[in-house]
Image 1 (spheres, one colour):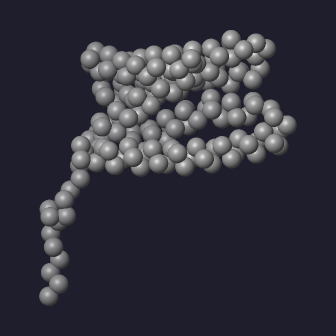
Image 2 (cartoon, rainbow, N blue to C red):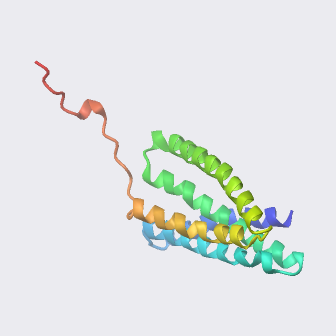
Image 3 (cartoon, rainbow, N blue to C red):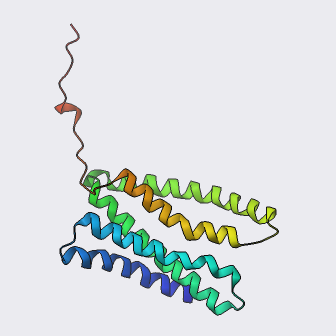
Length: 164
């Protein structure tokens, strides 16, 4: 229960952080990516979870990571509405959700193989979890260096070739 309560707070805080920066004059690009970076950096301590001797510090680190995940997700969903035309938002979010679910299936298989190979050493899976948000942010920045609304041209706007 503790992890989920903290995670809910993280989702609200992540959205609040980027909105506050935008209200203070930051560009949407800077505010969203800074909020994503803060959340990605907040996940990093989860790497130490398998090294802890007692359960409450482990719960605290996992709760922090869950909160950061929810804040990251809040900004990621808003990133879509910032860049994609209104009529395509649900399709893009749906495709992203499908891709995330498929990746989750593969990740579960990869983790099980890693645990078999390392005799149940959780450092590698927690290390992957700790760094994947920074990698994702890097990919987002490569694909969208500036968060600008996309313009979708209609095929009716295209000149038709003369086939005769």
